[in-house]
Image (cartoon, rainbow, N blue to C red; front, side, top):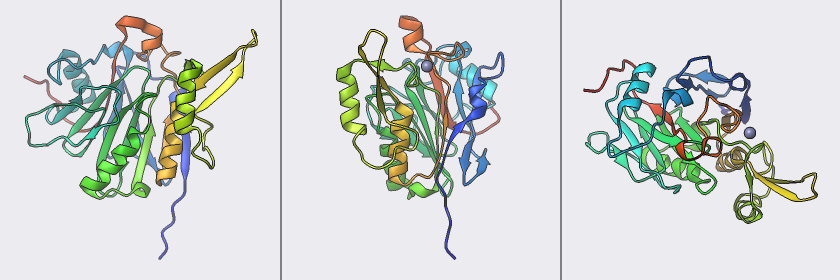
Length: 276
Ligand SMILES: [Zn+2]
């Protein structure tokens, strides 16, 4: 019998309304072939949860409090020392090491994987067959890390892109991601000339302002959706909230030096208890 799959790239309407008042996190659901999947915990902390910056240990008071609110067990919790790289690692579930020099993590239960974001795009991937998942911190420099995550998932666990549900969280959207011409051209050269259709628009767009100057804007979600679709991922949900425009979200551009790092996390086990 021939299997049937269809491409589903969907903007999440619900998320446009914003999170519920006083919530410290947004929970996400994957969509796969029209079905909503809640098999794997997937969430993003909000501004009011505080900054989730990584110090010398992966867990700290803010992180513990968030996991407790999410009812997630802090065991097998992993985090990254991020450098805007495209490096994805698979944490050793039996090891004692919690921090990895990477911008993305891939694994399976009970591993609870996290990255931090504040304008950069959180990309979540879930292999619906092998129950393997990944989370990536994908800024403009790191665009493409999601494809590296697919490759790591394939090598370690046999993940096939067509079995993967992808979810792109809120980020600095193209409405507010104005860049100079030089950066626009770097992005354009890498992601703007891939050929074929761009499912949700081009990664770089330019407009002429009232002063007659050219302005350049990046669309990280458009770039990622194009890369994922070209890799064979057919089920993608993207959240259209803009970190700059929402006070509920952490944004380096809006907040400046004391910006709020939000934690994007996936996996783990429900039934959280405070750590120690
Ligand atoms: Zn915006």
